[in-house]
Image 1 (cartoon, helix red, strand yellow):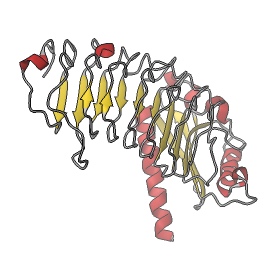
Image 2 (spheres, helix red, strand yellow):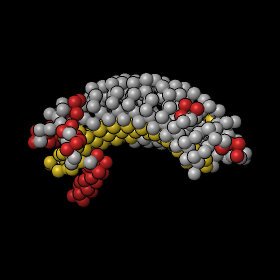
Image 3 (tube, helix red, strand yellow):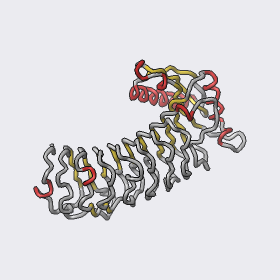
Image 4 (cartoon, helix red, strand yellow):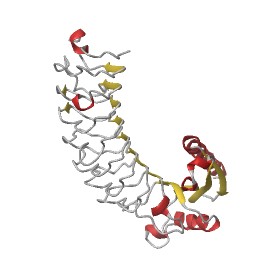
Amino acid sequence: MALLGLLVLLQLRLFVCIFCLQHGLQARAVEHLPAPGCRCFNVSAADASEGPDRAGLVCECAGWQKAAGSWSDAFAWASLRQACTDTPTALLDLRLVDLPSGVDRPGRLPEAGCDWSRRLVNLSVTGGLTGLEAAGFAGLARLRRLSLSRHARLTDYGEAVFAGLAGLVELAAVGNPVRSLAKTTLRGLAGLEEVVFSANRLGFLPAGVFAEACCAGLRRLRLDGNLLTVLEADLLTGLSRLEELDLRGNPIQRMDTGLFAPCRDSLVRLRVSHDDRLAFGGFPRLADGLLRDLRRLRLLQLDELKLTHFGPDDLVGLVSLE
């Protein structure tokens, strides 16, 4: 048990170091709590230009032993309350690991003496979710980065689930067995710059899903490791600033002419490949004009698509290709 505790502590220290490197912060340990519970570090801005809003607690919480059958009474929250009491500051970054069953509004955090709603910038929820309620993160108005990953029983992201997160810049939902997106899943996320839906089981994306009052500034979109077979012409509508699109590891059978038209003047990197573990997918030739006039495209990766016809006519107008 002592060795396990040491490994957990080392993992958390690595997480905090990575976080600080990414955001230009310096961290000081506040309290080391035995698992289960929360481990927290106090973070202060290394650069005065970052301002006081970049200072606060970075916490990772696990071990949801329930004291009275309520998530809000879980032992992990008790230790977080203690950390907030010892260091009266706002919670900046929170990682929740292996939530108890039945939680569908992880954004509605139990009161623990930390000012979540006003200051929380980064929220990561790993394991345990079985569903998400509409507007389930409402109230976290300052949130900029949200990660929902490796939830083995999460099969649907639902409609307008991220409503109220207009300032969200990065959304990652990785390793969840979700098969489709609702047209309104991303509605209202006007500030998004990066979306990662890697390693889900997405087989269907509705037309206009990226144009529902969202995504006009999206630069990176990852859909790799899914079950996408048909990409219709209006799928990427609204993505006029998209620079990087990753479609690797999908059993794609058809990409329609006009698919990349919305991002013709912005796309820089395009990756498409087939998942060879699947017996279906692939196609003999690209649709006429599919890649035409992608003037800024520098990287084009087309792997294992079972193409039998490919030539100069498929590369017309790709003047920046390296």
